[in-house]
Amino acid sequence: MTSILRRRALLTGAAAGLLAPRATRAAAEVPVGAIRWDAWQVPGSAETRAVERSLSPPEYRARLPFFAELAPDGTPHIDGGRQEVMDREIALARRAGLGFFAFVAYPEGSAMGRGLDLFLASRAREGFRFCLVCELRNWGTAERPAAILRRHAALMRHPDHLRLGGRPVYFLGFITPELVEQRWGGIDGLAAQVRSFRAGAREEAGADPLLVLMVRRSLAGLARRLGADALGAYTHADGEARGASYAALAALAEARWREQAATGLRVLPTAMAGWDRRPRVANPVPWEAWQRPGAGLDRHYLPGSAEEIAAHVARCRDWAARSPASAGACLVYAWNENDEGGWLVPTLPFDDARIEALARRLSRGTP
Image (spheres, helix red, strand yellow):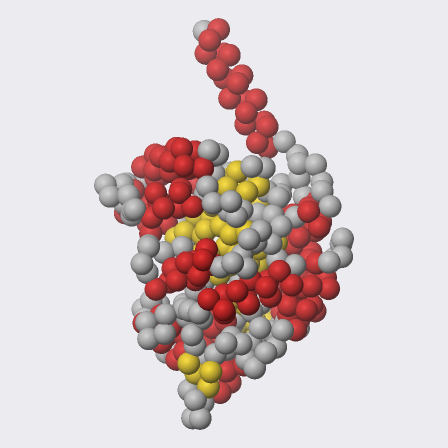
């Protein structure tokens, strides 16, 4: 009985340590990163063709990235798969005050993984951090865990992998109870795989990953059962918003940081650069088979000014610096989700207003 009580005391103490309030820090010490969803690094691929199509109508061409080209008839061609493009993007992100990219990860060899490959090959990269955002479906199944798990564990030992408190940061998202049941036979099955993933990462990187689950507050119980370290989000938006202001989107995101913190879990907050997926509504992409052309075209948020976006990102960094629930960093949706309405990357011909506004805001100690 004494040994049981001692073990319980140790576990209780460990849990208390995880939930203990963090000391506040200077905002400038909090790393700010941006999500990268790289769909235009392999010209001619299904993904690049789909994004070119969604951004081809005249009303959406202002969202094209700075490295896009327009044919005489206005048809866009996007080739982000050149090293010089990635090198310049890294330089622009540094200029904005960002400290890392969070790459949406795909199996090795996928066209969607070309951006990460270019980043890792960049000579301009040194000291600029990266981490991974993985969709649960890419983890495989209980019977056949995906090879991607071993690769991600190995990447955590990279000298430029983002670490917080010495722990490599890893985002796991797009989780639904239905997927957990179908692929893993329930939460216990997935929890076992999480433990196996942690063990592999400790062996490869010498540290336990800081696992951030990108889920809504309603799934906080699932996050606890999986042994997650923090809550996060890929996006914050109200799917019923009809031409709502950017200020409303920013306020919604900021309210959700507080709601996540109220669960008692740590939070790595996400700021929103925008949300307007009308290009994909008008010209559906193949991976969104559920989208009917034109259905929901009225649902979107109005774009924010460069200054509004920068102020919201600065408030996110400030929240991450001061909140006792903070995991110690903050994230922006997104660097290059241009056809969904969230981007920081300069747009064609070369509009870097968002970069410059962020540079001014993030160079200050407070918003």
